[in-house]
Image 1: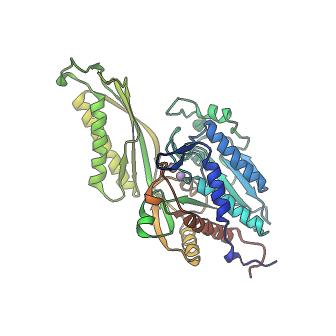
Image 2: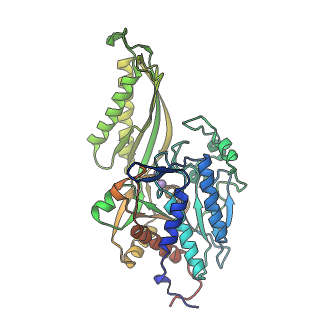
Image 3: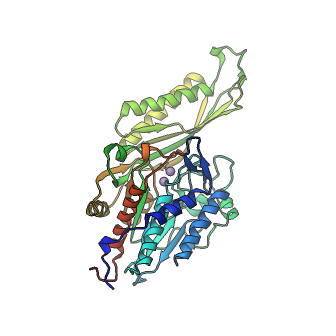
Length: 425
Ligand code: HGY
Ligand code: MN
Ligand code: MN
């Protein structure tokens, strides 16, 4: 039977149906009708989401493996089993104020590609795989992209299993066992995929601002996460003169403003964020004893990111000396910028153009599992627009037409890489 491979398109209603079903697990409904999602890694909701997706994988006849850090891979056999699979994938864990598309689209878009191939009885030379990786967000356990980092051999399994959760101190390995996802498959993975393609929402405003449908992702910017523990001296808020205070709360505020100033002065792609800041004892009439906070610095250029890190470090040292506090630093994540394989980027670009979509080559501001898979195989990403540029926000949204465009590009890219057995028309 001959099939016009180039004319194949995904079933957008089926894809949106799965996105909605998965989005109901850990659903967070907002006052304006926003429909977000909170499924922090290795929580009971994460387990429910994992179970649901594995069920869909098995319904599609995929052979499913779970590895020792909880990464799940479903494989559709190819004509030549000796060939490495073309892999699609992303993550299904979310941040606490997450949306229904971040990560989920890359996994469920991959399942939709598989189901479209099944539906048309289309066989491929290479096996085709769909994966979801553990703890991509890094919201509960750091670093982010932990599962895919272990998968590619960038972090030792034992080290990953011993990571403690930022919220309740739970050990990652214990949580993995508790939810039943400490799998038997060894990691790092025995062999690398033939190629890896990740469909993802942009999570920023660029595509929407420029009226572009497909982001052709050229790489991922560098990430530097630091946790600071600032220790001062708790004292009475009423009786302690300002000149006698050793106030970590003041230092935390100066660091928050200071890293923002560094990013503003450096310009370009430099960004700086203080996302977590916890006072202790956190009481209205007590000069704090201690503050724990995080600083997230990113830049597309490694040298500029190092420059931002040096300026941040100098700021901490100067404030500590002036106020008399101690500042302990702990690196939570540090990844250099990644450039994707030029041929893969060109393939995404040519495919999106062939399908008639507007395109823009762009780096990713967010971290993704693709930046880890790029260490072991040719990798690229397909972006679709985020309404109002919002993500890590329960108002995150991408319309069906853009979802369809992204999934169709994914389908055609994977077809090109996996090589159909049936002759094209
Ligand atoms: O932080 C990030 O960029 C990703 O969402 N983990
Ligand atoms: Mn993501
Ligand atoms: Mn995210």
